[in-house]
Image 1 (cartoon, rainbow, N blue to C red):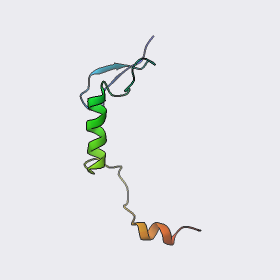
Image 2: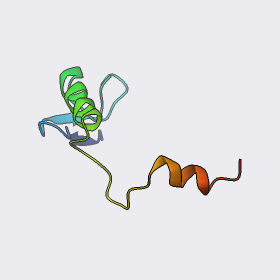
Image 3: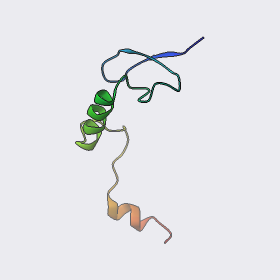
Length: 61
């Protein structure tokens, strides 16, 4: 039995097999659109934001 997932961008059905190069996306186009949304900060992981300065102050380097 083959697992089928929905493309995160367009919701098209995608078989989870080795031949599907762009899984979980249905195509390179959907993959690049999603990457662009992350790069433009249209998408983000929920949580508290930290500044670069805070990260360096809390590190042990």
